[in-house]
Image (cartoon, rainbow, N blue to C red; front, top):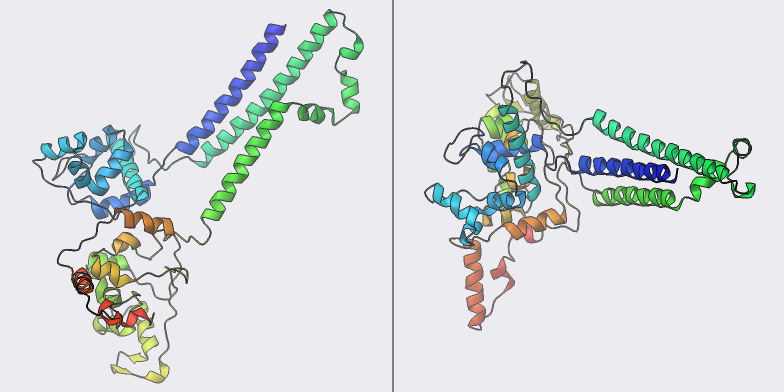
Length: 422
């Protein structure tokens, strides 16, 4: 009997251990977002790579699927030149295989962006290896991460495991009473009979409360759950990633910046010379839409806001009113960000912060815009000081300081309007 009791106890622990590993496995599943990775892949990789065929570079499907070291892949994608300069064996092998043709560096991609691309490539290549014909038996199913059924199923497994443990503990107690009865031990050493338990409805709860292992398990699980919830809640306070408000005019960046390939600075000219990118005035829209798509109801909203009559082609300023655009990207008042310093001086593309803007029908906040996110970018981005007027000016200022000459604030850009007016 004692052996049976020990076996049942070990079995209950095994059930609980399996449930714990299942929960850990679900948490570790799908570190990247394939949907976001698709947009990043199309914006950065398709000019040189295909998933299943060799183009300028290798076929990414088998290359990324066969490489199990994601940390190395991240370093290679972000800055392969640094790995080659460090004489990394894998990097040198790839570099020599492709006749020492250098791959572009993508220092603008965060670790999360690279993880999304890797997840997308592996997911799509897995589908391509499966039955390619849509609707055929065994056709590949898109991997979208753990479904609600799987999540609720896991919760059910954990609940069933707890119930099994309680039942087994009850069975163990019954077996121990039978053993004591057979040994003719005094009645005061026996546990209460069924009738006594029925009288005291809280007897089971009291008995469970005396089980130190069970109490420790619930305390630990509660502490972990509350700690995780508190951490995620505080970490995401004032983080509006994915924010996509409805705008008063349905303006499509996918059409203008993507299909028509209009340069971002044509509308957001202040991003090249000032602190703020600013919202373009409606007069910029009228440069084209005096004659283009004049029948569109969305274009007529611009006409109404300007007091413009398309029949007479005249403006009535008394009817003019501002368009109430909804701001999407909004930094705290204590955070200073200068667009011109990043766009003009550093030569950073708009997509580095705003994501694949050329594919967005409605703009949303792509990046978290947190302090950590900015610092990670600053650590990865190399300073390009060659043929750069800004840094040339700084070198001249330092040379003047070395010669003991007087240097005023004006020489350091103190006469720029954005220094004070923003």
